[in-house]
Image 1 (tube, rainbow, N blue to C red):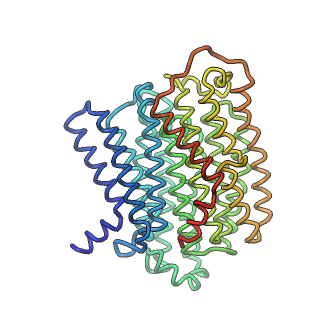
Image 2: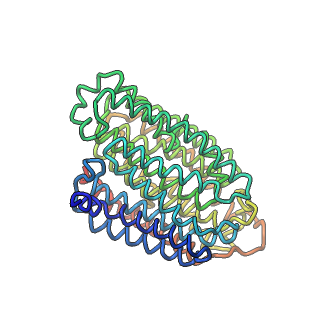
Image 3: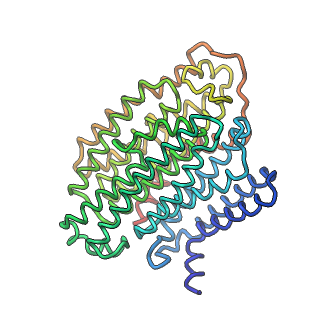
Length: 474
């Protein structure tokens, strides 16, 4: 009993989030119209979780028989995913009220997805990796189809569910092969025998299948086909959460398994990851140019950014892993902001989702247009914003590891992306306005956008605040 209580206190951010989410379910079951109360309870629970993440930061180690990391890396991941959930909640309430999807069940669903993300990112046992992935995925399947009266939302949920279930099969079979070769699913135990296992064909096959399962979640090519339709059809606030929290959790798991524990540098698996990075960057950026819908453009952009982060995986060094973690934070702030602007500008029945609908926004709502410009510049990697330093550290890690060619491909792909990001800015500032109607600016949404923009500037001007912390985690 004492060990259980000790483990629960060691994983306090996850424990607190579970308690709050279950409390929300119980409260909502008694009073269906208490949506405002659920909103504030959710935000309060998120703040408690973030506080506990700060408190447990220096208590590093493992919990639940070495199945979960605690402190350090785990606490930072908990803070980041809870922050993403908080920003999403701030964006969601006005958006869902406007589009007719404001149901009380939404808030515990966001927290359940967050619990899955925190578990996935900090699992040191492949069984817990699977549990975290499925908790996150099942809730996101539901959230993708949240606006059930919208045909595109139902389509998004169905596609995500079917392809997600297919990817889970690869993941589970990979875990089974790894267990068969190593005799354990614990990453700590596997890493102690890595030299012998690297020559084992069954183990390598298992790692390949595991890579496929996680590559689906990060939307790397060729496992990306679900992304455009799912991001486009899902409620915009859910697309924001999905493209940042879910992608960040899967990348944290990838970095922890393949770079930190398995150390696959200079191996056949690493060559495969490099190829995934190249085709993701090229296809994502090239296809994004042709998009007229801003959500589909951001979806293909998300595929390209998965390619950038895979560069850090290929490097596999301390700076490479640190660069991935820095990029997760920068991308989370930037994409939450970009999708947040889209959620404010979007009207009922999926109107105002074309890029040309943003014409003249700078004259109607200069603050909103300026924020969108900041997010586009950061996604493009223009200094002194966080997106620039995210790419800089990734490319630097590749060069230092002898993958200069991969860094060159990344730079070239980034130059291509500048075109379609700046196109949004040009439409907002230099095209004749498409409508005289003013866009309402909900206070909670503007708080979320303001915090995202502030974080982008802060970590752009002072990137060492994060990068030095990440370098000391492992």
